[in-house]
Image (cartoon, rainbow, N blue to C red; front, side, top):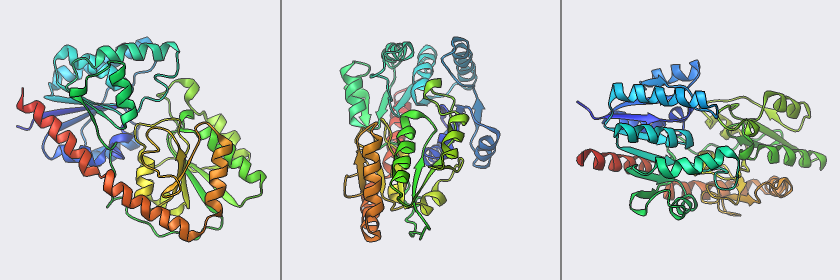
Length: 372
């Protein structure tokens, strides 16, 4: 009988996209179940891939939702009795680890990014900081996607050095995200890809698009990504906001997808002015497809983009500086952008191969199983 693995994550879209390779590889050696939420289309896509998914609901700030979520986790974990749990993102990392600690289930946690955890002082963030220190106490292994996050957790004594390790994010499958030939667009195309939340820098992208339009520069600015409800409400972009932005004529919203490759292939440059990341997958995937990128000089982004070599880095929360970098990209020659793309692919193959990530998880899981 195969050892049982349970993956606890925020949304099924992650297993269908950036963690698809990891999930599939684990399924070859373990009996894998995913605890998450997802819409009907995502559930169907998961079923077609052979993923076993249990809808455990979502944890919000509502205390009753939190209790329901934790109760669902506890009930399903007791029923399945996994040998190892993997948790991803902040809520599964906290609530999942609290439950697995009670049930004495060895757990591996991935800190996929901390956002404003240490910079905001609201009640939710203060509670998260308090809970992290307790929740991770018995966690067997903690993977970090950048060294800045790991140092913060170590300095705050949320974790210990002997069970903390840096891995290259979710990694990139360079064969899946193969180079795409450049297309001759009628207008130069900038493409923002990400969840529609404000700390991805979407406001700055909208403002920068407006600046380019005021200068009568010929560029099309597109937004691709899902509306999101699992962050703090004030951080989420609403449908009304998106409609007002598109009505201005500065940007176009083109919906969401589980396969970004055709959209990346059609773009001249990928833009992600995020405030902070664990290690951003969009930048990895775009670089692998030899697309130059513009992002922010912040943890989780600057590790991927080398300024002036594979793209440009701008200041965080600075729409004017972003517009300067977008204008610089727009005025560069096709040969310059081609070389940026090629250097970007070489870098991600060298430093961020998906195989490194998969092997790190397999090693951590096998070590736990050997010591049970």
